[in-house]
Length: 139
Length: 500
Image (cartoon, rainbow over the protein chains, first blue to last red):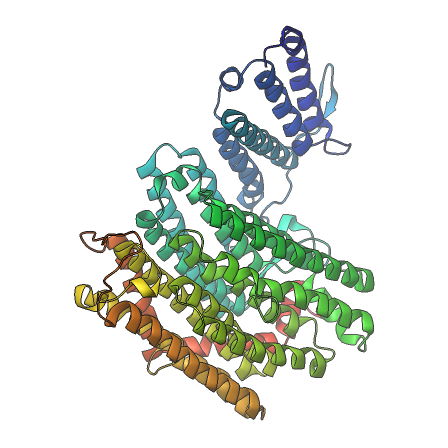
């Protein structure tokens, strides 16, 4: 599709979508949101690029191949599970670091559940773009 | 130490994740896939040795205490099943290196294969009913993609039937889980066992038992729920069919054994009586279906169904001997059935067809292959001294001990029909004169059998002979597993702690 309107809109919308996907990921521990929906939002940002321009451009903008995102996500999620075993606890035992506050976002609780969510984020982002890019390239 | 029961899930996950990134590096991916499967075997051996030595191990995932969080429980049955699956996983990975084409590999054959192994091991180890559902879905997703990978027309037709019927099974499973949860307020299997033991038999328990029986019955392909199996198993490459034959139906059998020894034992006259009836029908219908076909893979697919009947028969007798026989049968059948599919795949590699009409004369050209196929075929039919003989003997003796003479007669008759259909394959493919016409018009003559295909077949043949000649320690293990299953206190104590 070669629509000037869409391309101009994508320029503004894509960064907002990406920031929003990160926010969704971070608020997900106690509020609606989380890795899955955040990953989908990140994927839609690049799908918008692929629709407005073409798949190649979207792939270039992503910098890493979608498969690597899937691998990275699985490894991050797995490492969050293994963290507990380092201290002798059972697999997937949660571990929390001290709270701290960021200027805009407020208080942030960091722990292995967030790490797990980041893994989910990467896997969903990777697999959604991988499938969609394939379908778009074939058609 | 608490990591050990989780390892059979972590290792395939790690292998799948890493091999996903190595799609472009063929050698690296192959090496990783092999190393991952070998690592799984090592973990499974350690797990079995530890469980045998120290008793049942339960791990509370995330340190959430037992009835509330998810537990992974490794008892003798789980450990034996994990070990058998990992051994077959390793041999099929070796075979797949020579059998699965490059297009399928670059679309992710290896990651999917390990995802399947992860789902299967998770299903064997979990001590939580809903978690079992989750592992079933992991398995279903991985197997669905493996089945459809390649996108040939008949593959998609088979995959469609497979996935539809399995989704129906999943919905039965979920409904059953919902009813059980509504009734008891727990899904931890040990807790369920404890809570339902004190309840007298009620309609709701029986309903959920039947729903779960339907769900696991579809997975295990028992009569009359087996139609997805012969419709789909003959379509993908041999390595995929072989690993499906080894694992998928056996997970259904495992789930039946687990639930109908641990939880649903309030009304055994009805539930286990039903299992006995269904088993007999499964054995007979499967073997008759096989007799009607002339394609090696279709014949073998129907034999999977028929053999499942023997396993559930052992469960239906509901004695230590019966269940020990069932477990021995499951392991024996995993080895032999996989091996028959792998050897059949070599025949296809040599002649370019699975159709017996266009095969023949292979004995003269490839005597070793003919011998390997014959051993597995005879083992499946139950000829001494192979493992199939002992498996049948254990189940049949258990049947005689409880006085089910009619069922024993059916089992023996089905054994003879199995022998007929195994000799049919062997004489048609290996013994008779080579045919004069070929499906593709010309004779397909590759140089020889690649070692990557032959080595796993030789290893598995050695395993079935070894299991037949030196069965004592393994029979001992199945006895211990069956005793643990029939006396549920050890399992419940391992998960929930000492009972007050």
